[in-house]
Image (cartoon, rainbow, N blue to C red; front, top):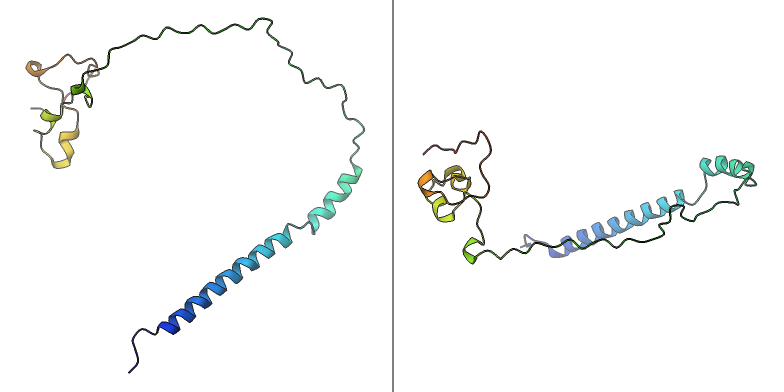
Length: 141
């Protein structure tokens, strides 16, 4: 009985595929180098133009020095950095109007618990970033 999987036939096919792929790569590489070698219409047109170009009018009095020298280099004044105390560890992942414990009480469908829900007046903290004009919390609770 013959085996369902002929390992020698698959190996031969894969070797042929690899050989064909390498041969195609080499062919296209050689084709590309042959095209870029410099033979063709482009060179026959460019050669007479290059011969006709007169380079005798090259400017020799070009000055590459800067014309706007500053006599005195002004040291930039160091801005005084305002030092802030680092926040407490409990505010490491704090977003204004977003408390993780409170957010987990909202329903999970459509990720409503991930939305920004500002607390009611009695639960409000001192929020540093106020809601913009016309903002209304959704869903109304």
